[in-house]
Length: 481
View 1 (tube, rainbow, N blue to C red):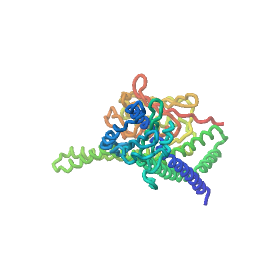
View 2 (view 1 turned 60 degrees about the horizontal axis):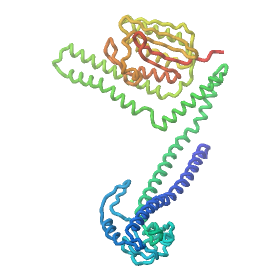
View 3 (view 1 turned 120 degrees about the vertical axis):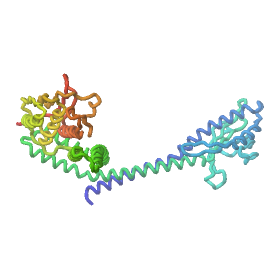
């Protein structure tokens, strides 16, 4: 048995013993708690009945019980339906008995004990002494299922105890609540055991993960020349946080599969409908050649759109599964921006859009050069799409302490109010002013994920004086020593 298995078995054994002890205590405590509640209610009822008997009896101490017989006959004849937490109650089960000062039964609501001597019953004896009396005993000898809870209180007239009133209730009437509470407690306990068992199995699989984290950290430390303790600490914490996020996603079962399927299906409906409609029209034999070519072009265009959506979704899915960048490199931002600006000049040439680059700051970041190029390139492409013909896209690199801003501004119409909080949502896109067509709506979601991996912040809003302004704020690389 290896160490991981021993740890797993030990955890399960400790948990099983703990749950067993807790369940035993809880189950044993249910019956007394329900009986205490029932007894408290019987005490109040007994004093109510004693007060009524005292008011209707003579001043000489003669107990009047004649009025009780028709009262309880009508009470027991009543039929109703009360839903008490799922249990149906349809009749009254409360019993009442009145005894005189010698313990002789003057009235019994069920008519079974009238004339008998009850002075030796504990509850009656204590009540006739002016004390509180209670007992639980079987209605029929040796049959515990007929147990009755009885509470007795004295009847006092003129300062003298002249009798006692006993109020009783069959234990069966609240026994069903006790049984239900026990069943629910057992279900909760069993569910807890199953849930914790599943959790422990999953966590035990991840017990080997810390050794991998230590190995990754040591390999990172060996690559650093010279060794930087603050940088090593940040890397170790980042790696540990990534492992925790990965375990959390595994436990929750979220790799965004359901979300992707839903959103992808929604986005594919429109181009598929256009292709299906064009295909149906192309079956018409008498269609003019010009219209036929136009619909064929529509089919090709919508097919390319579907392909672009699928490709972007695959890229974004692969990126979102990453929790850390992995191996990083020092990326000078000046050369990267010059390269992207040159490519953007060619992309904007057909519409006479110029690129203005201001990157005097000599600054670098630790990251993935390919991903940073994709993120900034997406922001520049977005700015070109929304720029008017003959406009200018301004790219600025500005250092602020230990962080650096890459600012990209266009001269377009800016963002409408409703789009401010949604621009980074998957599949959210605005129509381009020059073509009135929308993109896949995945580019900015891609940028946001790349920013998160680089511990960066991304913001897109309206600039002062018009146009949109995108700001990618990155942490600067540690200085070389």
